[in-house]
Amino acid sequence: MTFDFLEIALFQEDGAYYVKEHIIAMYPVLPTMQGVDHVLMRTAMDELFEFCRGREERFAEQFVWMEILLERTETIAAREKERIRRELQVYDSLWENHPRVKQIRAEVAASKAQLEAQFKKGRAQLEAERAQVEKGKAQLEAERAQLEKGRVQLEAQLEAERAQLEKGRAQLETEGEVHGLQHAIVTLVRVRYPALIQMAQQKVAHLDKIDALNFLFEQISAQTTEDGVRALLLPTVA
Image (cartoon, rainbow, N blue to C red):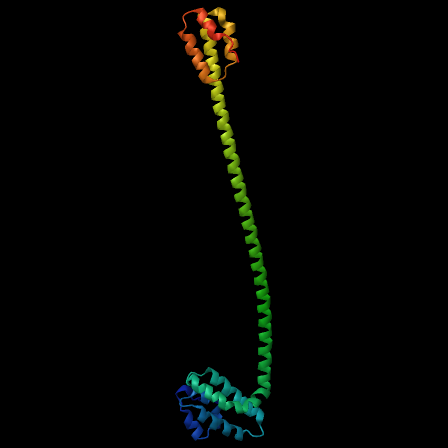
């Protein structure tokens, strides 16, 4: 046996024709056709209801398909869809009591509850991760502040040590120059006036100022007699 099926492009069909000809089998797919409005749909629903009187389950099945197709169709403007929905509200009780609808609603409710549970779990996990990130951020800020404090302290310590080293270097240079001048004076006296060497050593031992040593060296160098040098080397009276 061979069946030859006829394909019908419903979106090209005129819905009013099927209602006028009372082709009730096509009423559930009316929302997919052209020229369908709330008046036509109410007429079709009333006729379908009368046709299925006493067989409410069958009517509910047809109503279910009509509602589903109404939601998905693009042949009816959104404003007209809303008017059709208001017309169909008369049969909402049949929709609500249909076993398949109850099953779908239960599945949707279960799926919604599962999604809500997953959402809450995900949100809680996200909040925990965010708190962890904030904690890590605060810890990083504290460590950064500690590092900055350590850097400042280290720089201050290095600067203090640098100043101390500079002071020590200057002091060593001064001491070296003082020792050099003391040695120069003693050497000068030893070469010119050996008898006064002990006086020269005692004299320079009490002098630690570069200016005073320079002055003494210049004065001794300018003297031409031993007595003049002896006078310079005599202890200074305080």
